[in-house]
Figure 1 (cartoon, rainbow, N blue to C red):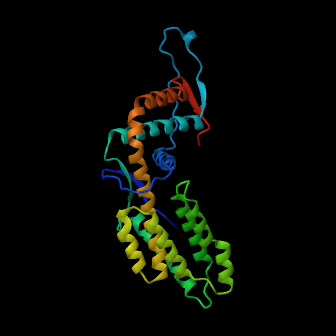
Figure 2: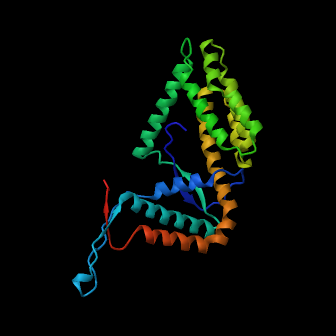
Figure 3: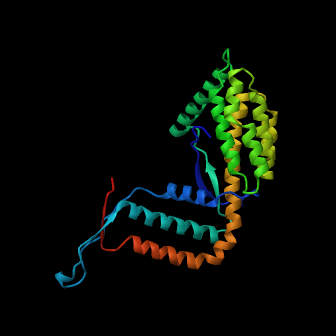
Length: 266
């Protein structure tokens, strides 16, 4: 969603029932969110009584340190998914009265006000709206399973931005019709818990507000997909958890030698 400021965090509600999505991407996204750019220098002194036995520090790059940190984050996340039946991802809204919340509201409102002024201009300006439909198309395609070729082709055909631009040049583009198609397609792909959101979208008359709410519901659908994938993956993780954690821990040991000093951090 444009100017999307929401964060993903861990919740305790039951996951929604919906189609599966690429779990690896959500895992990578959460891992990157949890990682902090920290550097450290391990104690290079030896506990041996003989100074001659002291080994010089082995130089470790900052990338190697970050790789070890990601491994630890992934291992922690996998463990939590396996043992916590209520684990799920959810969006965390910023408090409205906070500075970040006010800034987000102002930026979002300015974004949609510009779109409204462009669509209400004489003649209307459609480039901004076309870019939004291009983004919507990619999000819809990301929900499809490998076998969904028929719907994939249909989405690409209807939301063909080159064709839409040609129609806009001749004042023949139907923005409301495109929005209606998007809402209909979302209704086919969403979990049952989003049916009421789809009905509200269909009942909204203002095209700018429709587009705004489309992005909001798409964000919810992405979270639903990720949580369903987590739920589907949990039995496999539970069976493989011990071996997975053993392997990951070994990778961490190999990537963060005890006698090392970090270089390349900035």
